[in-house]
Length: 143
Image (cartoon, rainbow, N blue to C red; front, top):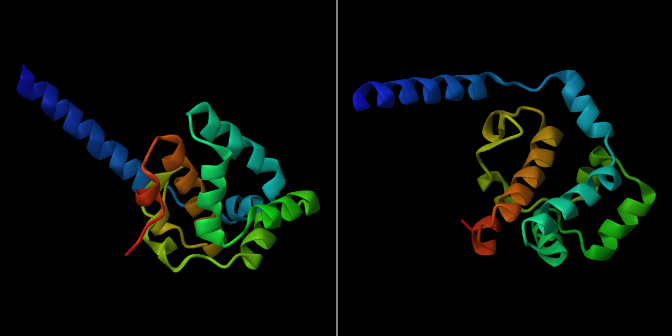
């Protein structure tokens, strides 16, 4: 009985892995992300991390690590309602960003072809890790 339950669980995990591997971004998806404003999403980032007991200061630290943006820079971009396209064009992406791996929003980051979509998913992944209670030194990856 126990063996058959383990086999069923193993098969379901394999199918889930296959489904995740098959999710690919579409041109429409990439366009929608590019046109989304950072100002529209930022309050959701703050809410997400604060609901899980993390602070806005920690969120700002994570964003600064990834993009090089200070709190003042972020506020200016929020006020200007810049799109994610403009946001990441202005960013000085951390060279260790390529170490951000895994699945976020159903997409495996390493398999995303569109550069901008990958950068947005880097940000999403870092914020997700922060909200899940991961230690800051793990979130701010060092080689």
